[in-house]
Image (spheres, rainbow, N blue to C red):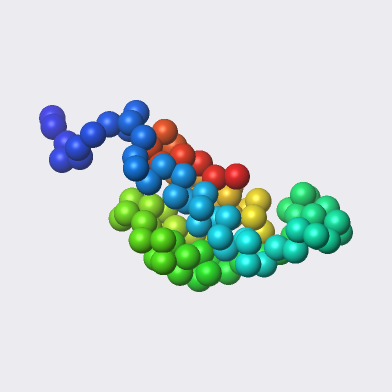
Length: 106
């Protein structure tokens, strides 16, 4: 049975790494990398937080394709540390088997 999708889950998309750029951009606006205490808190998952809405707006501003916007829109409401946001996004990417196509985030 043929599916309607074109391409393969083994080929990188031109949008490979686009979600990493979104994550970097939302945390660049809230991070204070010059403060050693803030860096230590971020290392243990207690650093700055962003809201789901911030991530959705950043994804829309980045003009992501439908597949990647769907990943971002799957985020549950709430505030996220970088570590928690990456876990949520990577979980959805892996669940759709798009890791090789779009890349994961860290």
